[in-house]
Image (cartoon, rainbow, N blue to C red; front, side, top):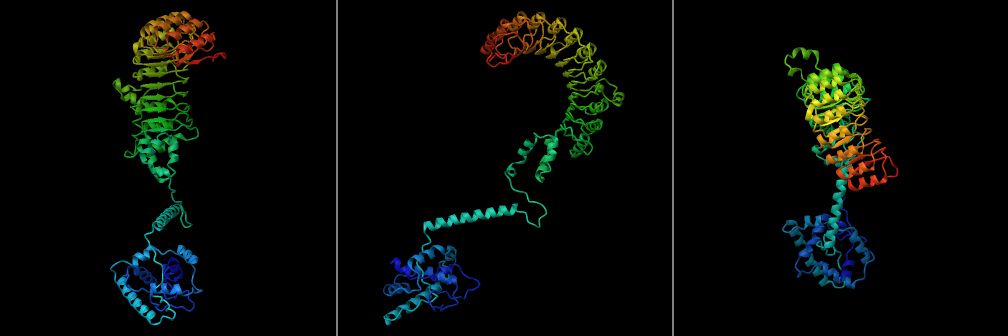
Length: 574
């Protein structure tokens, strides 16, 4: 029976009508030679509605579909009909859309009721004609009643294909929309912003990422897009200004940045607390003058290697930036002192108004600094806690005497490579007392046991002591150091006249040693090193370069000091 149904229908019986032509609505469609549509007023949508409404008729009615099926079983197939294979292929290629079925065959509408009445009338006339003329050919089916196979749209396979098709359409629509967003038309003047994953990041996260950039890099990032421009100028990113470039005109950069960051106060920039201009050789007094005038809340200033900076501009900075606590002028050869401006000095009547409340001052490699300048510094910076004067070769015992007298709260002091310092200066430093925790007198070859013994007796809370190159220091200093400074953690006695005896006393009384350097101590042997390894097992760094030791001593250190990093020059050690 299925074969009979398939052979009884052609391409015009409902399949072609699923693709309506709105331009040629009156065109007759038939695969029979000379067959024309008798009702040209019927639209393709009405044909579909009649096709599907036939399934709802009563089985008692004699349908022209059944009459036609009975006729085809005894009548040879016309040459103009499709065979079963062609009809199936046509069904697959032109499956009707369920939208037309839903729109035209809804229950209870007047169109569906009128179509049922027309179909019943046609069924009655067709049955009567077959009864009176049994030997005549059956009348051709009018175009108002297309002969189509009953198609079930509840087929799961068809619904699955339809869902997949809709998903593909939605995906194509999204892809086209993205392409349209990113597409640049010929009439457009600027490129549209291309969507990226970076757009999904919130502004708070971007601010944290940008916080690792220097100020010149932030300025470059602000030119990427409008969002970056807005994020870059977030006040949280400008609490510090960091520029470390030799090619940038720092004076103009500082002037622009401080003006741009003056949000609510046109003349001052209150959000900047730290400025780092290390290595900016083009920095001059003009740039420091801008900082002094516009950054009153400045707390931290670093200008290492700025050789064009002089005392005058530095006086303005420390005078107007009253909250300044950290000042680093390493490698500034023109700096000879730190003081207030003459105008401020004349206006200040009380002693506390003449004070500079610096906590940290680094004047390493300021070759022009002398004892007179150090006296001015000590007088005005009495609150100093960290002072570094490495390689200030012109200072001597007189300058240290001022430091010990005015800066009694000093915690760290470095006077390495200050060749003029003697035992007298070290004895003056001993007056600082227990506040001193860090002292470096490396390569001060005029210091001997006299100054070190006096220092160890008074500065009992020393944690770091560097005596490298002080060849006049011997076991006597080690004995006093071990008895009075038992909590010392880092000690450098390279090139000192220390033997195994002084080393054993030190190791026995200072078990908290973590860093020890015996570089170039010719009098040290395996016995002293082994005793240190067994007594100070918390050692983390042990320097035994240029010492006459054997592999056995090295293995002993490795055995007892598990986490110790050993510095040596013996290729036989492994």
